Length: 169
Ligand code: FEO
Image (tube, rainbow, N blue to C red; front, side, top):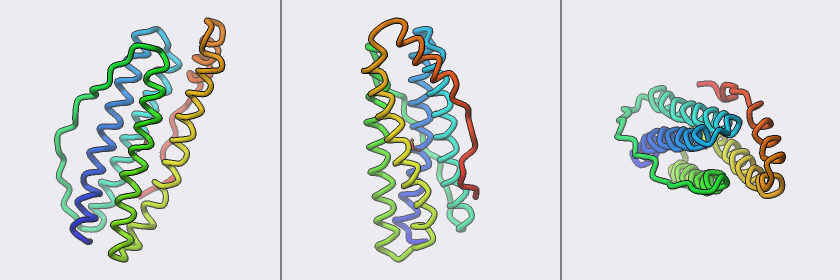
């Protein structure tokens, strides 16, 4: 594997674990506010991010690459309003899409089509995650303004169930 592509994938393992930590911190914020449904949504999001990290980790090992695990940063976002984590999540997913696109472009540049094909799943996943996080902001704006609406939204988010990623390595 091209050295630069391997490095970027290795860094992405760390970024996905940081994402998991960031989402756990969002769950933490909502738990402290008594919004268990919102907390559930982000706990599951944190699990999905761990899955992403593991998929890339395994892909690197399956391609005879050495993986180096670095320190995971402290979640450093401050939340005041109930909508703040929703906005931060959307911004974060847009950032992650940019990271995936950078690895994709690097793999394409060296004709590493195996990695391109592997990353196709992540490209699609990012599209879904951006949509989900953007939809949540819209719902909060529409319904989150009064106690009844917030209760309903919290109940909806409590219904999210974890499912393993559709990509298997
Ligand atoms: Fe692993 Fe939310 O992207």
